[in-house]
Amino acid sequence: MKKVVLMCTVLVMMLSMVAANAQDKVELVLGSWRTEDVEAWDNILAVFEAANPNIDVKFEPTLNTEYDSVMTNAVAAGTGPDLITCRPFDRALLLYQGGGLADIKDIEGLSHFSDVAKSAWSTDDKSATYCVPMASVIHGFIYNKDIFTELGIEVPTTESEFFAVLDTIKAAGITPLDITTKDAWTTQTMGFNNMWPNFAGGEAARLGVIDGSVKVTDPGFVAALATVARWKDYLPEGHESIGYADAQQLFPLGQAAIYPSGSWEIPLFESQADFEMGAFKPYTPDGATECSISDHVDIAVGMNSKSAHPAEAKIFLEWLTTAEFAQVYSDNQPGFFSLSDHPIEIEDPLAAEFVSWRSECSSTIRLFDQFLSRGEPAGNTTSSDNIYLMVQGSKTPEEVAQIIQDGLDEWYTPITQ
Image 1 (cartoon, helix red, strand yellow):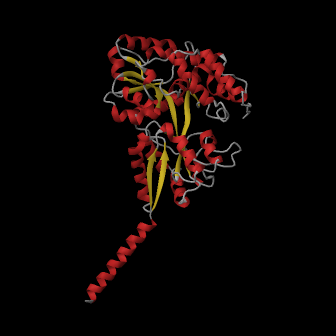
Image 2: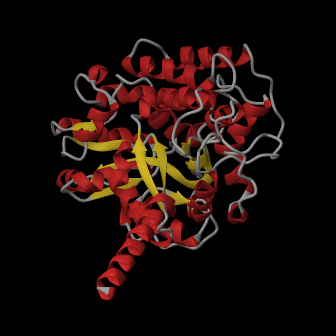
């Protein structure tokens, strides 16, 4: 009888311990706009949870076109996920200024990030940092190597070569460029931001727009718009009624030869395409001797200031600053390049091709993301709302440049950095 009582006592104690541990376990929710990243984050979070068994992190993405408004409304209501994936510059800044993101500048691991990386998620005076930088993405063109080989095409480097390649592909009855115009933002983000660095003068031109010494109506920016306008004749049939999500399916299914976009598409395409892919950097104007790429500070994670579990959320954010995270993130998200100073190995050949351009070209970021979209009409909005119409053929490059510059002139006061 004593043994039975003892065994029962031990069992009760064990059950109590299990119950206590279950009660001690905290679940954090990580919000994101990248619905395609569920499997990758499952792998990444498994590494974190193995070292932090009392914290579960659940990845809950929102459709990318709805994410910004969903997060804005959620934090305004004092709700939303514990951890918020942050877009760079003003969109995240607005969440911070609205009380939605906590100041996390006391996280020690932030010392592993450069001032440039942190600037995308800090206040202008650097008094607060509200997101841990994770990665940049690089703009360029992804192409179907099988089609290039079949048609005997070489990778283009100049504008003339690029359009000659498109003509060859079109003559073979294949859609040359997989970019569409139903969603206004695509031709701005993946077209104009791909091309203006080479045509307008890279980082010096971006800083010139910010300090007022350069205008969007200057010849370099008009030339960038003009080269994107020429893409019209090479797009999928009915591109006006094809959205971004559908366009993402055309290229990996082999229905188009070239996808103008960037390194962020690599994980999705590699999971779907059954052909070998390559990448080439944005083409230059004929006769140019230098190149520039958009190596954009793109993604970070911050803490909801209303999270019920701030201590656990900070543990997770601290982990995002480590070498372990930098490597596991790079392994699972090829095409997203760590912004930390930890050395990492990039094994994915397509991602390695993109990142190799850093040693060949100078770098800048997307034109309107810093300072130029804070007022109304925002530079990002005005450009998105008009560039797609230009590609459809209803506006000229000169008209679009003037509309964008006029919009900035309504509210923007030049800033000297």
